Amino acid sequence: MFWGCLPISSKELQINEQIRDKEVRVIDSDGSQLGVMPASEALERAYARDLDLVKIAPKATPPVCKIIDYGKYRFEQAKREKEAKKNQHIVEIKEIRLSLNIDTHDFNTKLGHAKRFLSEGNKVKVSIRFRGREMGHPEHGTVIMQKFAEACAEDANVERAAKLEGRNMFMFLAPKPAK
Image 1 (cartoon, rainbow, N blue to C red):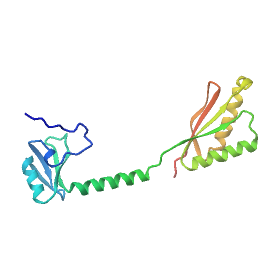
Image 2 (cartoon, one colour):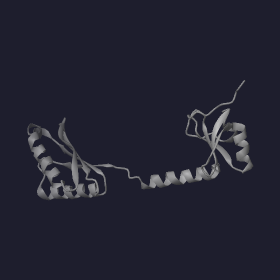
Image 3 (cartoon, helix red, strand yellow):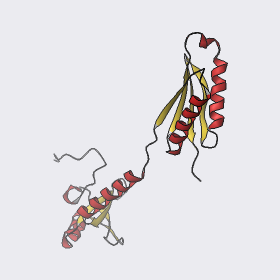
Image 4 (cartoon, rainbow, N blue to C red):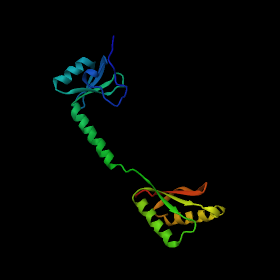
């Protein structure tokens, strides 16, 4: 009877004695196929070279194992993951708040901030909050949003057009892809 515990997650690879299959397809350390053989024989070949037998494709029939130096493999894999993480850019959403009776200088200042955020590769959420009697004229907010979108047209695409939600009007701008 078998009482051992097998790992539930497929993230961890099975190595050496953890491989419980009867037959496995073996790939040599240089990439050449050694064929289908019993797992014990494959393990002996790996130990003869002071290397590890690693199951790389457990779902295949028969499972595919490779004879490699597991420590070196893990190191190179961690190095690749670190390099990929370094190259990725997390897109943030920056918010610009406008008002219904915004003056030209304030408008241009907010426009400069938005262009800076877009040049950094972030998305911009432009919002206007309607207070009191301003709710009676949402079309004025739409005009300001259109003017803002036209001023940002060379740097951004309108991802979501201006839409009134409750007392707020929102518009989302995304940076244009680099050419």
